[in-house]
Image (tube, rainbow, N blue to C red; front, side, top):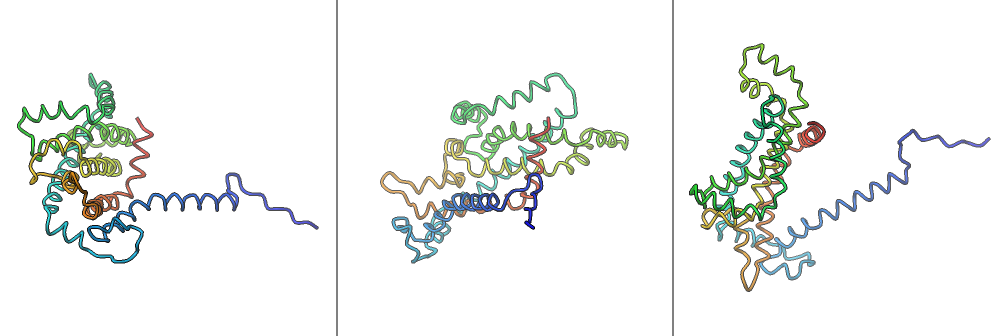
Length: 283
């Protein structure tokens, strides 16, 4: 009596397909990790270690000691923290209020407002440098934290407002009605009831705003003229001269710059999937 093969459930992958899928994912992960590991390796090889990056010996911390003790890296780091946190807090607050207003209120110009946010996102960054430079010059905000924070808010707010509008649409309007019954003002309802429920969306937009401000180079390079106000991305360019580039120092600085971004992702990762899904399917 011959045995019959047990039929697979609908949608269930075969063993060969599972092996192929996992092998593909492993290869893709190794490909994505290779540049990061290569930079870390070069940063531990000394000032000229980049010339022999495949030699797995002679590791040292000289590049990191030089970066921390003999350059203005800590000053640049502090400037980046101020600018990135300022752009994140102000940008997310503006985007949240705008997204909530469009989601819950009907007023003249609400749809054109959201379309304006979308159109603004289409302009290349290079096109905006000259007009923003002129505006900041007239406001006397060049070479200042405030000017750079406002610039980064102009980049992040349109996308964040679209994202949060979609997330607010997923929150039942009955919660707003309950807040009004309890005597809360519209802002009180927004602040005390809606925002706590919108944490995943706020995490996504906050992470986007932070990363945008943390690693941006073009605006910071044009608007910050004094070395005391350089951000990390601009300060990194000082290691590149006309005759020689300090690749060892640049890789060490790149590793140190990437750490705060990695920590930010670690703290918000559990909210990212829910926030991106809701923002991408609603509205």
